[in-house]
Image 1 (tube, rainbow, N blue to C red):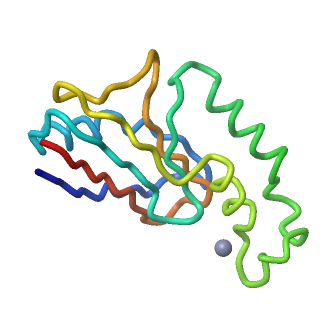
Image 2 (cartoon, helix red, strand yellow):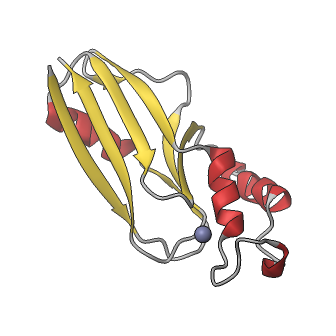
Length: 138
Ligand code: ZN
């Protein structure tokens, strides 16, 4: 069995951003030479997510607005966690959007359903953070 582990680094300009990381995951798969197997992609920080959805226009703004309704950043003092920190909302947004995705590898390609793309969701940005890509197979 072959395996590859890669860390992708991010340092977003804004506190909250969504980034399509499908090309980076595809290049890790190409580099691995694996044709049949599984690909795990996970955020390595508890205030960021990795998820699969469409890259359709408007959708990311809609996600952001929805997450702000569920776990608004302000007022910062409304969270018990925010004593010394101000990122309680980011922990909750990460929890909703998930930690990781697993994609099947078939014929050397990510075996997506229609329109599926892999995204990094940042909820407490403007600092260096990582995503792990682990691919195993033959
Ligand atoms: Zn925190």
